[in-house]
Length: 447
Image 1: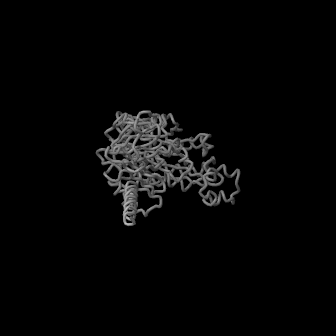
Image 2: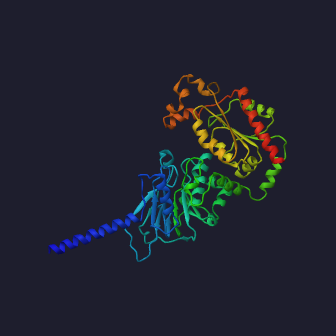
Image 3: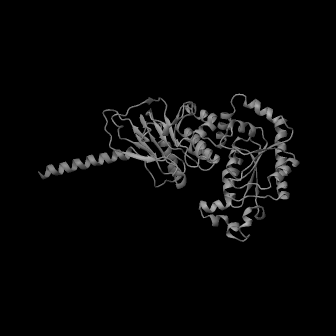
């Protein structure tokens, strides 16, 4: 009897161990973090859309999670759940994981606006079957978070989507993917119609407003980011850079008669064309003496167009306008994201308010140089900022912005809400330098 009991206990332990091993092998859940070398190797070895464990989830990155179901998958949009469809002779152990598919997972405010999704090995409910069966795999992501801001539309949305597709799919099949989107915005899809059609030849699935189930051969949930305005070629199976992303944007918006239209716009003037990205009173960082600035820009020799992009601004028309311009000028802010449409050799001028230098370099200055733009920045001084009305020159706010902010966004808002009255004498010198560069650029393209 004792021998029989020992055999029974041993068999139970063996079954438990095998079950535990199966669950472990069917998921990669790592929140501890790896070295960059190990991360890169792990990603390349466990890429979604490839034959590997039924469910994988790489949580080793500080900014994003990348999860996938590597087999036939049923999406139940009502419960926001993705089920692995197991063969009828398999009965996998009960298992599920949850994730939010937005590439700012350490940002609590952003993630509070992102819907949580469930991936599971559990079988779908008995009464649930495939309503629509797709032959292409799906990428699932959110347009929540900060997506209403133009900078984040590109840097939390389109650039990570570009990176993710290049990571998952070969070059000749990159538009054969179905975009499944949660926290969907109608205005967003209308605004980016041309660009979205370039990402995928399939209709978008707005999962929050779906009632029909969808089945896919496999699903990847989440978007990969390489950092602000960055594409790291070392982390992709076929090296790509930010320049490739720009070519992708150019191709998306250079359809039909765009090239002809852009050429006609350029020919309307013999003077360099400057596009001034203005900010309105609701968002801060306004140029208070804008009229004086515009007059100075014109006297120097530019043709000036003032632009205040809104949700309703046509990206196709804005692309044409920027492509026809020789320079762009604006205060540090989201509207400058459209520098991505400038041609290599054009001039990008960023007015940098007090306390924003690091963000200005990271968001626009550094990537502008990567894209072959002639980048210039104008650093606002104490007497040019509205902060001078509230803080003395020796106040910590003015002398050491980094120490004042200490990583707190509410402190950073002090700098983001300032307005500017630039010193026209100093600003004119800045503009004259920009004009010389833009003039040479214009003459070279004509010649």
